[in-house]
Image 1 (spheres, rainbow, N blue to C red):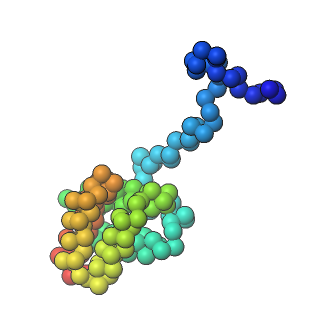
Image 2: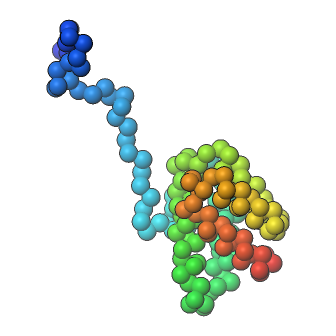
Image 3: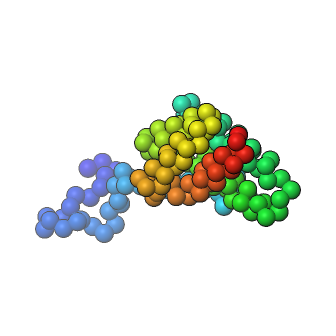
Length: 156
């Protein structure tokens, strides 16, 4: 064998010498961690797929509508900040391509419903995401629920 070739397994059928390196195929880089201070403003969306850009636009607009409605209301500041953090997490995941296709489709549908001010349909989609994909969506579903509820209350 040439230089750097792995030693063959022992004739006894064992795993070979203990110093044998693990195959490089198993070495995967750790996925990037969500920054602890993420917000809707700080989330990188530069790599979000073109077909999902409307989700970023719709949810940013919806967040801004709600944030403006609660300006000057100290009791709602924590909720607005929490919505920003939660949407930042969603945007981070969209940017990394870390959302499964069925959830992407529902996000697009939810945003179409929000844009049409069809809050009942938006709520049904939110409930569907909650029941079918909570493990994937749990970090940001609360923000979507609050935004739908606030926009419905405002009629916007």
